[in-house]
Image (cartoon, rainbow, N blue to C red):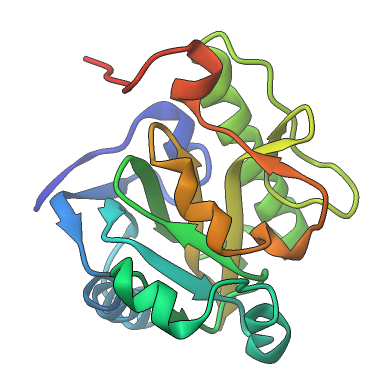
Length: 215
């Protein structure tokens, strides 16, 4: 992994002048990154570090929000099918419902002291959505966030990015996932975010390409 100064679009979500980005190379196991995130959260809560953000890609996994009993009902494939596809299922303490992480999806976990700037949960989530809308716009994709009853970022009726956070002791954890160029077939195993009748899309699909690279 390596630490760098964050891009301006990410820095604007930080409550301090410095936001350290920890960019993890190669595909990472969800549990390993979760433990790293928890360690950062504890350190930030103790004011031992500046705000930070982990950026990574995960091996295939379905994660469930804190209402796991509800979220698990939105996993439509049985355990045998998921095991054969090498897809883990992990219950988490974030908000939101069931979602998928997989290679080709860019995941960002901001660990930010929100209380220090009197930034509330709703304003924080909307700010994350705004950043994702800006990223999509940089590729020429018109996306929308701040839609009542549909958290995340959407291109029409298809979700291109998910948002699911936890705020504890005034410090954020968990975060966002942007579908850059994942295999969208992974989403067939769930009802994304528990919303029936909606689809999923990716930057690659919207651009009509196989993969997305940005120098």
